[in-house]
Amino acid sequence: MFDTNVFGPLFVTQYFQTLLKSGGRVINISSSLGKISSQYSAYSPAYGISKTALNTVTLRLAHALKEKAVAVNSMCPGWVRTDMGGKNAPLPVEKGAETAVWLATEAPQELTGKFIKDKNEIEF
Ligand SMILES: NC(=O)c1ccc[n+]([C@@H]2O[C@H](COP(=O)([O-])OP(=O)(O)OC[C@H]3O[C@@H](n4cnc5c(N)ncnc54)[C@H](OP(=O)(O)O)[C@@H]3O)[C@@H](O)[C@H]2O)c1
Image (cartoon, rainbow, N blue to C red):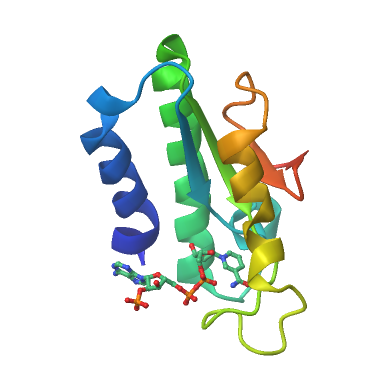
């Protein structure tokens, strides 16, 4: 879980660091289950802890890349009808991707080190 959800995004960003220029954007796909307030629960512990860790990676990278004016944010897609989300999820894939696409294109460059859902900041 940590290899895929935490070390994967961290190492990919590190490997591509020299290619990240001013105006670059890194978007980590997290989950509301990674919120600190979601951890007082028996539900999906490994997944939740890994997404909390991913969010801290986002903060560390946002700080490290701020001088280069590269924005780094976490986002939650919501509950989406994918293989993982299952057929009962309320959101189509297009809706789940919307905030990530916004972060990659229209979001203000100054927006960095944040946790975003539905194009709005949410608490870590
Ligand atoms: N769906 C939701 O409701 C929901 C909610 C909150 C957050 N998210 C997050 O959204 C992201 C995308 O999820 P999804 O819903 O699109 O899930 P998905 O349909 O199950 O797709 C997951 C993708 O991750 C790839 N993958 C899994 N383990 C991997 C590994 N070890 N190495 C390389 N690739 C790996 C899978 O590749 P293969 O197809 O080759 O196996 C697949 O392409 C995830 O980070 C998930 O935690 C999803």
